[in-house]
Image (cartoon, rainbow, N blue to C red; front, side, top):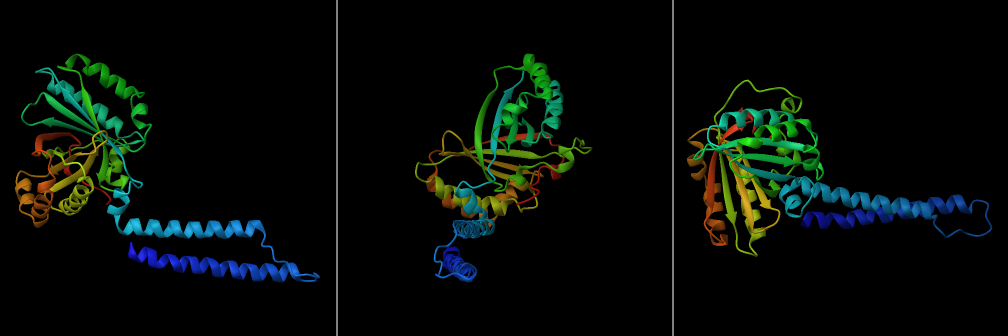
Length: 306
């Protein structure tokens, strides 16, 4: 932030110098052969320099955010997506049918322009429970999704499989910071299918913080997430905030092997995060464990760009 404001006077000075040069040139042209000096600057010239100054200030702000993505996200900048978590409980005995129908829907859904991800996961403790993790890049994308033929086919196919009505929770994404960090690989977006099934463990950690600690919790968790996602055994480490209750957060930790969760808790950054947020907790954290149904492969969960 300091370097940004130190550079701002330089930009102002450049623009002033440009104005002086422009005035001098305009004066020379306008006074050639004229009986009296012309002192009024054309309105178009003033507008041009005003726009130039605004563009240079915007450029500096953008550069500052690119150097510190946390500032961009904490200030509500571009790149935020909406995560819709759809909770489903099937009737016992319909699990495989549900997975087959949901796989077809997910494979088609990730090809929609406004959808970044469409994960399908199954609860470890209760195989009749599933979660669809739908990540939308545009406000209109959820409504457009429900207008597609593949959604209508899925909805009608699974209707009689539901043990209870579906429920949903909406979150805004915090990490990955950039929208591209949520995208599945391009080949899935173009309709290609996966040939290998990797067994991954997805852990959803539900957090409720004390009012007034939200920003401090975000800062500590962003630092932890940025480091955690670089661990070899971690495919994803997503961080989201509930849209309606700003004191509630969700961590989506996707592990590549059974040893990875314990290895993560042995790291310095996890210990620092745990100790930093301890007094911010409004209630003890809870977690649910899932296995992956879609995408199949470890590589298709990983963040493509940070």
